[in-house]
Image (cartoon, rainbow over all chains, first blue to last red):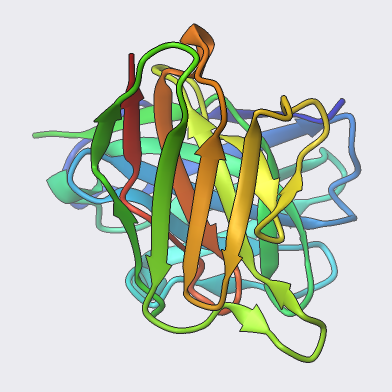
Length: 120
Length: 112
């Protein structure tokens, strides 16, 4: 059974960089597509983008200028960096797995989510 | 971006009755060459991540009760819970994966 677990700081100040890691067990990070999705009261579920060990990566244009994703195959983890955070970035961040073609398809495994609050 | 609009925002259904949730996309999510709709449904309970229920618009994920069914094609889709159970109280989301960025509907809250 695939399990995903997000980790990282839960509180940030405006202008700081958010760094989250998703640890994957029960599946190889070398297969499939790995996404980050966030959920805030004001905007519902928002797909941030995906990465893969084989190369393809895509960031949502709404966040593209601030997002970087990467994969660490030696640790079976993938990560998200979101720079210059503001209060509007306060959300629960989920990592998720999917299969896909050019882009990911549906998300069949999710992490439990991590609440990130941006506040001075 | 493809915008997904769900209706209603919320609905109250008696135990054992049918619940119907609608999802409409601003452009087709049907890839006609393979006759597949790039549309999925999720269930989210408080404090939990979304759980995949339906993919390719009508295929139930393994372990999902058969009271859940998905239908529709093109731009109009429906999730039906044929006989609502207490454990089905949740928020339901549709999601398109036809084109990037992948997008979700705003959610429909189902209550007893």
